Length: 437
Image (cartoon, rainbow, N blue to C red; front, side, top):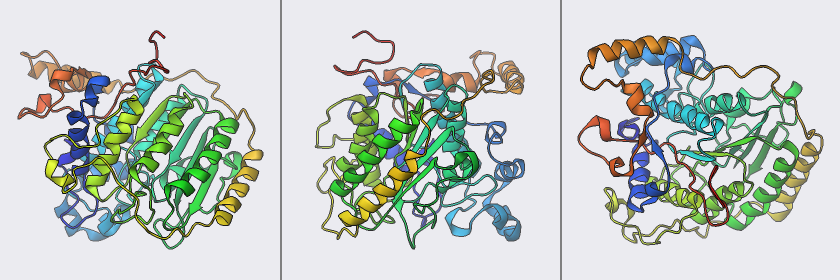
């Protein structure tokens, strides 16, 4: 469903890329190595746990026609052409956010140690406004859910754009550390200076790695791995939320980095190696064939599965021509990130992290009960009254595990699951949670 929405013909954001990624994951048979669930959509009440009431209510009722009739009112919440009031904007956002909330719950309940929601990672949205193609800050909603069970949560962002919405949301707390590797300078959103480190109790817990055009795999690895080792050693998170925006790949329509698919995936594999519960989200990415390639490959990396470099036939096979290979190579783009510049950035970050205590403050009250709210029980009763034959509500159907035989598209709505959450089934060296060695 999430791949059916459309920001507009000329808009660079194409939700169809999620359908392509789903199709490629299924074509490789990776769905057979994980649990595929169809999470319930986020309700307005859940969105209001982070976003302001008036903003959520506006998203619920806005339409293209209403935005055109009342442009001054719409401009308060929507940022012009970047965030258009397209048909179904609230439903699109509820699917994305619902996947992120459900994925966090699976980690909290010990049902999965690795979860993926490629439709999430929309990291620019603000508390009371849309920004940068993002309407609902699903990353923050996942983090808030994880904080109910974990003392500290790490947010890591490898999108080419600074993760400003998430950083802003947790800028004053020491229970969430935000780390962003991004292009800095004359580039949206213009934030993320290395000296932006948080305020108050959160001082030191915002880590920004500002990079320049053309950074390649070797240079990126040279700064990514040392910085993340320091972060993991000092902060010691109970869970990691990793935004895997693919606009940092070479050849992206908007991005200006020069990472290959394998260089991007190496970051995911490195974070997996720490053995901390890991929640991977999507994000940016505007050359859609490369987005699908990379997220399918990173799904395989997280599952510990080898995949054929030749792309198997799938519903969107023609998009991958003429080479039909699972690869996004780097180009001969100039790298403006000199070793001296990267060393200087790393030194500044090391000095910042040196002042971070090993054990930041922790939650000291009882864990509140899980969503959904009490009122949802009444909604279920009403739906059961009108569905006497099935004796099952839409929310109950969405929450069930999808058997492998059903993980395909059909003409019926009931059997069109979204690949929003995966369970790591273990490898020869690292068994799944609860499995035998």
